[in-house]
Image 1 (cartoon, rainbow, N blue to C red):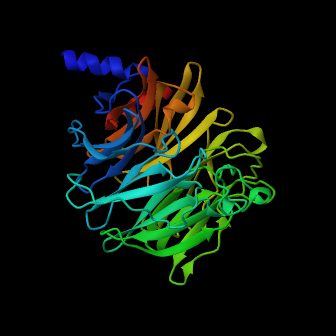
Image 2: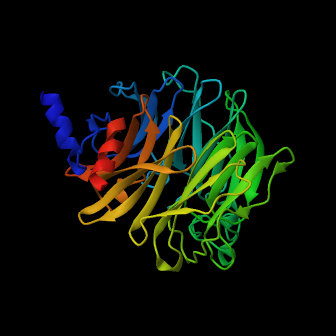
Length: 417
C-alpha cells in the first residue's frame, strides 16, 4: 500500500484518468531524456540519463508488461552532453543484439560533441568497448541519432553532422559548433548515415543532405522497398520544412520535400519529425509554424515513402509539437504536446490501418517548458501503450511512466460525446 501511494505522489505531475495506470519508473532524481525500444516479446526497454557526481550515467530497465525490472548501467562518465532534446537511445538489431548511443563533448564549444556507441550481446548484462559512427575528428555537433534495421545483423545509423560548419580548420573554439551556422561561418549542418555491424564495424558511410536544420530530431524506418529517413531541412531562404531521402538499389535518393509547409524561420526550432513503417506503409508526423500558426501534421504513404497523402492537422494555434509515433497492434498512435491552461497536455490520437482516427486521449498536467523533453510512446502488449516523459519537482527533473489501457480510448470517446 505504501508503494502504491508513493507512485501516486510521483505521478502527481499528470492527471490519472480512467484507463491510465501510473507506473513506478525506475529513474531517480535528476533524471531526464527517456527513450523506448521494443522487443519482439512485447517487452519494452526504457533508457534514460541520470546526473551522478561530476558526470552522467546512462541506464536501462526492461518493462515486462507489469513493472520495470531493476535498472542496469550501460555507461557512465564525465564530459557528456546531456539535454532535453538530443537524447541517448537504444536500438534492437535484427539479430537481437542491443546497440546503445550517448553523446560526449569533444571540445570547449558548448555544442561540440560526438556520438558514442556500444553493443551488448547479452541483453544489457555487458557492453563492448565504445566507438563512434563518424571519424571526422572535428569539434562540432554530432547527434540527433535515429536508426533503421539492416538484415541480417546490422543497424543503419543516421545523425546530424557538423563537420562542415567550422569556419577554418582548428577553429572549433570560436565556432558555434553547428547551431544555425550558415555559409558566412563555414558550411552548413549535414545529414549523414553509416552502417554499424553487430561487432561494431562501421561501413557504408554516406552524405544524405549537405544542408539541414541544425538541431531537430531525425527519424528513420525500414520499408519493404528500403530505408526511409525524414528530417527538418533548410534552404538558403531559411525554409525549414520536413524533407526525406530513400535508400534504393542505386544508392540514396536525392533529398525532396515531404510536404511544402513553407515555414520560414531564422533559427532552429528544435522540433523534429517522427516516422514509423510497416511493409509499404509509412506514417510521418511533424510540427510546423508556417504563417505563425503552430500545428501538428500527420501524413501517410502506401508506397514506402515515394509520396505522402495530404496531411491531417491537429491542435491548430495551440500545438507545441515534440511528436512521436508507435504501432499499436494493427493500429498506430500519434502523440504530441499541446498548450493547456495549467501548462501542457500530451495528446494521443489512435488510427486504424487506413488512417482513420478511432480514439483520443489527453494526459494533462505536464510542464510546457523544455523540462518535459520529448515524451515517448511504445506498445506494451495486449493493446496497451507505454508512455514516458520527464516531470519537474522539488528534486529537479525526473522520468515518469504510465500505461494506457485499451479501455482508455473508449472512455475518452464517451467523454467527448
